[in-house]
Length: 311
Image (tube, rainbow, N blue to C red; front, top):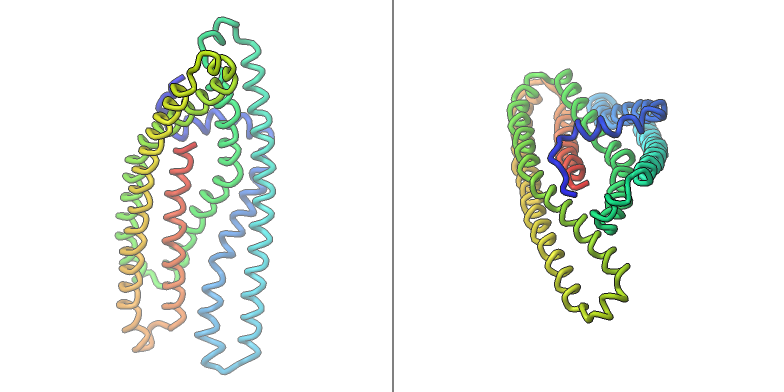
């Protein structure tokens, strides 16, 4: 049962009929996600207003109001994040329940000859383990992918409105980084496809060996079984180790060099404007905060896509 190489859109089209019935729940969860992403953009702006308005004016009352507003934004954002996790987790459970039911109904209609040609362990691994990963896609991964994408776009919009001249200098480097992540994902996809095949193969063998343990012991084949599983596990480990080294090593390099480079560029461009009064210190705070936060969702987006590749 070797899997065919298909893209993400192909698999999402196959899964859409299972989501269609509960699309209202999905839309409401995505709406809450949109609000949450917008609220995450607000707190750096509140800090900027404290620095630019209340502190120079020496107005403690205004500072207190901004502080309470900041706390309110954090609390509301946390509550909505919890709510969207609950909603989309319910959607994931409904989808996977329907998904498993349809798979079992299909298996019951297949002829006996087909089962004679298939490994029982691999069938169980496909139905149980793989379907559980589909549930993760509709609960945890969907939240992070869409949320990170919305936040990334929102950061660029706010920065462009705040100081578009500085944003223009950052944009080319971000484009280069996006393409670098794209090629990294394409490169790692072949590793994760092989890892999925190894995982299914190991799960199938373990299930078969457990079911046939009396026969294995009767024929004194324990050593052969252990050697077989050890060899398969070592092959899977070697693939995972190489993929993880490339993935996390690249993530660390991108994060270190580009994060530092962006902050240096922002300070170099905004510091002279702050000195002559053409820009405010709050603007610098907003850019530094957003750049630090913008790197994280971009890294998370690539990590989320790689998790889908693993699934």
